[in-house]
Image (cartoon, rainbow, N blue to C red; front, side, top):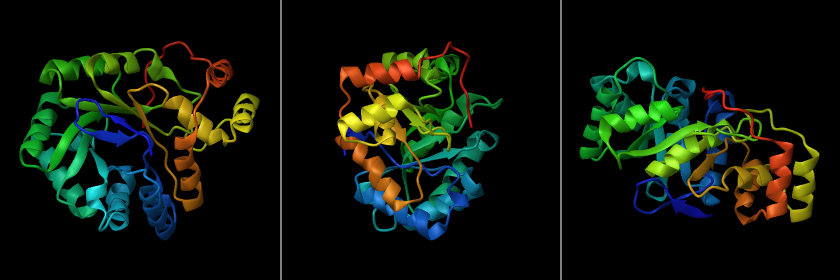
Length: 275
């Protein structure tokens, strides 16, 4: 699996990881098997959150990664309503317990609400000093939110911004990706297939057929074409996971990129969508 530099972190992270949003609605045995298959396939960037199933998904992930922790880049998120200084510390402890681990590689503020960012970030720094997280970042932040966050902590602290990114919503290409690239922040695209609304398009089918790939593999390669961008597609099906991992073998030429650009043009800026 291809890896690349992840924001200010040392070392590299797989470009394609495995997401777990809404996995509480899947058969737990199948979901756990899919996470393990993803890890076997090199998709060792495993993303979850305390919000997912109110902790249920973290518990599933904990079972899936048992005995494999050292192979992973493990990510979870704190809900905004829990993101006071003390609340963040407590939420992280609860996530670690559910995940059956003593540390996270990355801990994110799931989205921004009214609580002061500084208190959340102060807790993140405390958790990092304690060795309970390796790095921290944010999610669903637009460029103005990112500028506010940078103003609180300075350069080199925000590891990533995790945001919605798929072919029918390329909004982050306007301002978010350029801001992150300027400031050395990784971009992680969630729901790269549009949350169950993967588009049917002749352009995708034609590119996939010409390159001996599937439309989803083409989409993943297109979305991660920038050196700062990673993707975390979700799947609770092991066979589907193999398809996702196979995107790593694909290379899009200029004609393929142009065809996808034409089929899914970048819409005018309208701010970020979020979940």
